[in-house]
Every structure is written in structure tokens, then in C-alpha cells.
Amino acid sequence: MNKAQTGSRGEVEASRYLREKGYRIHAANYRCRLGEIDIIAEDEKYICFVEVKTRSENSRFAAADAVDFSKRKKLIAAANLFLTQYAGNKQPRFDIVEIYMRGEAVRKIRLIKNAYNGEGK
View 1 (tube, rainbow, N blue to C red):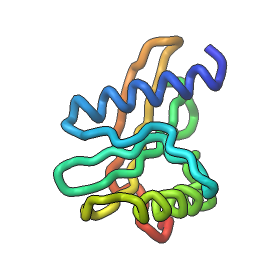
View 2 (view 1 turned 180 degrees about the horizontal axis):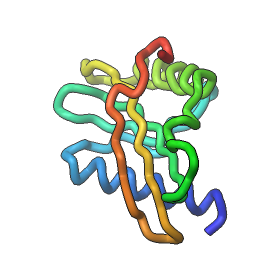
View 3 (view 1 turned 90 degrees about the horizontal axis):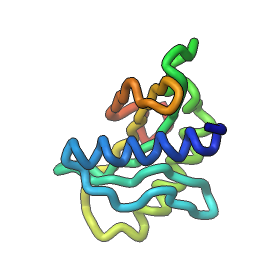
View 4 (view 1 turned 90 degrees about the vertical axis):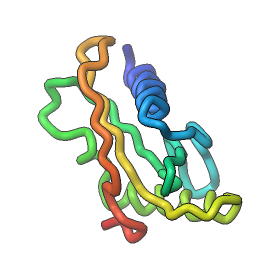
């Protein structure tokens, strides 16, 4: 698999995982002029803006480490634009889903809730 295929596969697996955990998926690959959000989902309390990072299982660094401050600021800006159109009143939350693969097989999925706040910290 090339990088784009691996990323797409990770997003599909993350969506499946979230649905299994009771989340309702609002959008996948939400794009606006301020950026892209991989998954927008909702649980009982929160509207969740989810960044998905897929890596090989023997990666030297955690997949979440790729979501640096600059990337977080772009995600927050896109989320704020989404929220202007969102009819619900749930609190926003920023999550990261790490997908670790061996070849084409998913080896581990890790959901990091509240990975950072609305200021990117």
C-alpha cells in the first residue's frame, strides 16, 4: 500500500472503531477553506473532531506525535467553522485515533480523547 492508501485505510478503520464504541459519524474528510478534519463524530456528550494517524506497528514515534501545534491550530480553525453550521449544542472535543498496522493488517487502534484543547495545547 502507498501512503495515501494507508491513510485512507486508517480512516475507514477509525470510523468503524468509533461506530463500534457508540459514536455517530457526522462527516468524514470534512473540507473547508481552513483545512480538513478526518472524522467528525458525536458521542453522548461531545461533538468530536478526530484526527487519524496511521503508522506501521514498528514506528519509532507515536502516531499522535505527528499532530503538532501547527496542525492542531488548523484543525481548531476548521472545527470552529463547522460549529457555526452545527445545529447541536454539544461541547466540542479534539481527539486523535492512532492506527498501527503490519502490512495490510490492523494491529492496534488507540483513541486519545481530549488530545488537546481549543487553544491547541
